[in-house]
Image (cartoon, rainbow, N blue to C red):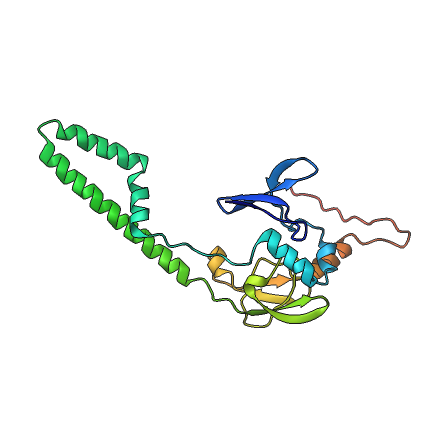
Length: 230
């Protein structure tokens, strides 16, 4: 899958392979993997005031919509994929060799079992995919700060760089950095940890780091040294 974008979207020339986007960088003249704004200094996240409507539209065009669809292939499409697997082809070649000898009864029975086993495997995969699709939460309105004003947008319209407001009992619509306040998050679906985790804002982290790097009256940095036990 490939395509091109204008300068308005800020994406330029790009193509996608297995849901990974590669963008043509003008500086190097080569295609590079699309970089997301996840490694910025903490002060930039703290000073963020959200996006404008134009920036949000450009971010959605560059990074895509905030949604994930689990495709559900047809039974026969998945069945043909299983039959093209190297191990299944090797087994069928063995069955063909057995048919050339006196074991053709055994070979035919083995072939029928192989086809039945692959059908059961495909049915199990389709059932697991259907269960995974039911776990996807429906899109709900989220409060974001756009052009200096708070408004509600759908979850799939949230773009990287948006400033969100999270209420109690809600669902976090994306990976985010907490810039103000604190919250308790249930991460059982992601990590399997049954105990809710307390999340502190990056402002609190900066305050603790500043306190640890405290300075004395002459402006010299104070260090606290602990002796390791041997």
